[in-house]
Amino acid sequence: MSTPFVVAVPSKGRLQENAEGFFARAGLSLSKPGGARDYRGTIAGLDNVEIAYLSASEIAANLARGAVHLGVTGEDLVRENIPDADRRVLLIDALGFGSANVVVAVPQAWIDVRTMADLDDVASGFREQHNHRMRVATKYINLTRGFFARHGVSDYRIVESAGATEGAPAAGSAELIVDITTTGATLAANGLKVLDDGVILRSQANLVASKDADWSNGARETARVILDHIAARARANKYREVRTRFAGCNDALLMEAHNRFGVVAPFGGPTSSGMLTLHCPPGKLYALGSFLREHGADTVSVVSLDYVFDRENPLFAKLEAFLRQ
Ligand SMILES: Nc1ncnc2c1ncn2[C@@H]1O[C@H](COP(=O)(O)OP(=O)(O)OP(=O)(O)O)[C@@H](O)[C@H]1O
Ligand SMILES: O=P(O)(O)OC[C@H]1O[C@H](OP(=O)(O)OP(=O)(O)O)[C@H](O)[C@@H]1O
Ligand SMILES: [Mg+2]
Image (tube, rainbow, N blue to C red; front, side, top):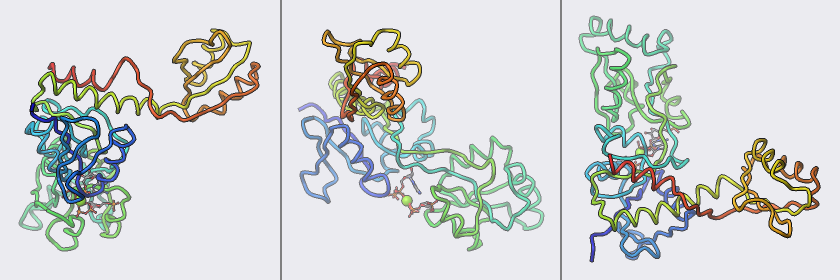
């Protein structure tokens, strides 16, 4: 048996359900042969693939070590936990879920503090008044250090927080925080506000590849098959299939449809019987339907696509280029 190809998938938390849905929509059905509490799984039809169910932060750590080939996790965890992330892992594709911002937030009562520059002023005066440096509660230690340094803020100390970070200022264990937020409800409930230029990172879930995993030829071939499924689904999501038949169709008309509506003709112009198949972005369907009828089409049908397999696979091409570096 060759060593397995390992894909890490969130086992709990906010990313879990969406990650499983993402693979399922790509036609990759994950299952846990040992039952719901099993932390190893399989993908139907791909015998040498092992699914490792891990927490989102463990996935980032395993990608850094090369213990898994691919993983789904938040960009915040990648940037925080992997030094020199861009060399050691590749963010293959943003997945459109798990969106959240890592932000600098201060008490709303600090009415004169709106920007990082204002915060720098506070930091400088703080030590003289209070006998200790301004404290920032966070679990995003590396992101905080980098961001504060880029803004020239150095007079502060990090208080490491494992949870309930937003409570730190009210509890008196820190003056401000760096944490992740989506709706802002937790910040508001704790009387905190985000600085105007205080967004450190706009994060979302990503499909990530590890540079240091065992990229044998077999592993590359498995990655190609998995990414082929994902790319086919991504391409299918971008379009609806439009079918029609009419006499007046010509190259100029197809060019106009392309320029005005972003339409592509994946199989070329009309067939000998005049049938025409187009792929059209969802937001332009009605406009395209009107355009085709104005030019003589009697009927235009539209269907959703499940997969569009192309010869080119942009996701695998990206991975190959990264592994060659
Ligand atoms: N509102 C949010 N708050 C926190 N994380 C979010 C939010 N929205 C999306 N995420 C993403 O989900 C990731 C994991 O968060 P979550 O708290 O669900 O995991 P977890 O199971 O608690 O993981 P761990 O035990 O490692 O902290 C975050 O790092 C972030 O990328
Ligand atoms: O802006 P909001 O929509 O209010 O979301 C932000 C909150 O959600 C997260 O906590 P989570 O629920 O994951 O709990 P945890 O800290 O135990 O992981 C995060 O740490 C914030 O506290
Ligand atoms: Mg959490």
